[in-house]
Image 1 (cartoon, rainbow over the protein chains, first blue to last red):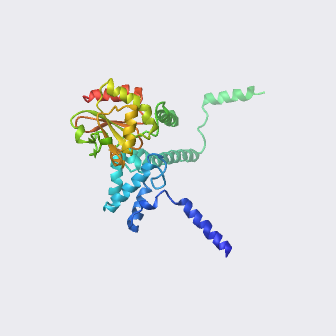
Image 2 (image 1 turned 90 degrees about the horizontal axis):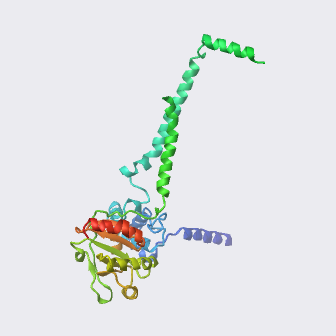
Image 3 (image 1 turned 120 degrees about the vertical axis):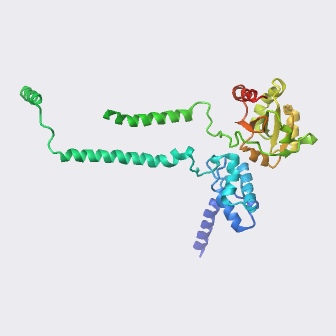
Length: 157
Length: 177
């Protein structure tokens, strides 16, 4: 029994550790709206800490943006609209997942392009090697080569 | 001709070297972000002034090229750039306007009384909402606004004499300040 209590306590601690910086007073009364706002705030970069989402960050600006986001959601903004409201002010960089735009084509398609390039290169290499095997014997020596070979073999001590 | 194929990795390597050199060049701060509002109209705002002084609104800036500086009494880098702002206002007669970002009215007034007030007008952005509308992510930030009310340039962090001479003042002159 005591062990189970300890286990529950540990689990609770683990959950507490992963709790984000969202403060109780920031939360929306409507659980559905709060869940939406919460999900959106995980997609937004905190510009002060830059590698944290505003959901994780305890920076002042992150707090302000969480509140602002919740205001937009409560005012009836759709998910895309609410995100766009922040993007309009801070640019695409505020999105932790960069959108697919001409400026990010290299980012999104670069790895696939490099992979395809490598596949083409190795395929053509393999094919050439196999084709070389199929041809059988290498080309016969020319007369000059034969003479040189004979000379070399004779000179060899 | 086939040999050229082997130069592809070398070319790729040089490309990477170029990219890293660009990213690591001295004077580049990777934390500094471009403004999303360049060449877009500045947001609308109407703020009260500190200690009964006249406030600042978008309308009050109309028709002239101006510099808007976000500062706060609690912000240490703002104290560093402050002498430069004083020089801009007194010697260069730059039309400088201030927005006190998330500052208490009394604190902002005391800050200006102690260090000097380089601004033609100051608005109090106590909630920080005007800052968010401008895309401010840390004071001090300095915005160059043209006659049509569009944001033309932003400087993040304390102004330096170099940034002033090389970036801000030439741009201000160019748009007719």
